[in-house]
Amino acid sequence: MHDLTSQPVSMIDSSPPLLHHYGEISRLPPQIPTPERSDLPDGIVLMEEYCQLPLIDLSCLSSTNEKVRLACADAICRASSEWGFFQVVNHGISPELVRNMRREQMKLFQTPFDKKVTCGVLNNSYRWGTPTATCPKQFSWSEAFHIPISKVFEQACYGEFSSLREVMVEFAAAMSKLARLLAGVLAENLGHPRGVFESTCQESNCFLRLNRYPACPISSEISGLVPHTDSDYLTILSQDEVGGLQLLKDSKWVAVKPNPDALIVNIGDLSQAWSNDIYKSVEHKVTANREKERYSIAYFLCPSYDSLIGSCREPSSIYRKFTFGEYRNQVQEDVKRTGRKIGLPRFLL
Image (tube, rainbow, N blue to C red; front, side, top):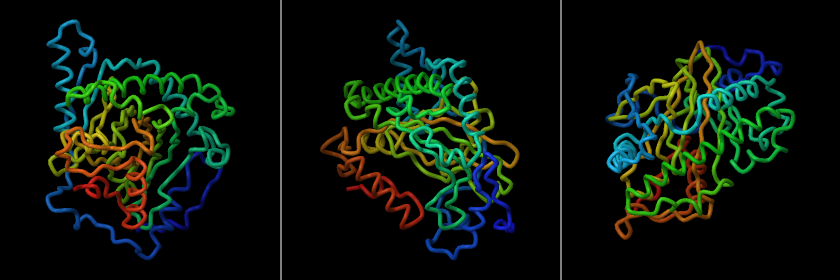
């Protein structure tokens, strides 16, 4: 173990004092039992290999050929069931917009750390590390801005970062449109109207998260983002070329190779509950990189906190009904008490 607490904390650098905080956590007496590598659940194999995620051409959804449209929708639903993850190309978000968004994202994160903490930009949504971590295995080597989509459109949220606003508004609107298109396909596959989520998943409930994973000198000891599932209906991810995203497939960790033309889509816990386990919310993580920093942007399709999450297969649901607020509160309570997210198993009938 490195002598981490002796490292100076620089408030001039753009990176947060992750190494210093990690060192402090490393010296804490254990408060919550955390599984080490030898204590992984039965059947989970620690293996890192590249996987070939299903790659779906979304332009086929607007084909004049009905068979082509149906085949595309079927590929989306099959990937959501078998993988819980898939990639999409020809998704309607231009490469230029993605490049512009990445440029503005990098400029924002290159701001000095103390300014990011205090300036209140993007609804004062800056966060770094893992404040709830009580041991090293719970700590994520990352920083982020996590902002409600409704706030993205408010000029007051940007302060001096005026060039960020124009690009971010366009990017958020495009991601929102894509998320609703995909959610509609998934709903229709189970016999529901395409707009079934429109009334509950309004802009004020959905989020855009800008992530940066700084280069990590102790990358073998820590995660960029600890293993988790997403507590939403679905997530759309735009990532750079560095890589690091891994998902749990057939009881082993597999790496997702970056595709510069594709966005990554993953199913969230709420879709798994609503579909009665037809669609799968899959555990995933981000590895830390010793040499390179990594950037990504995630869009989260979420309902209002008072929305009731039931099964589309009533009365044969395997989960009890719950509100999104109840689910989020339970997740936060579990993390605080056990150090990890338990999620849907809490709501099994």
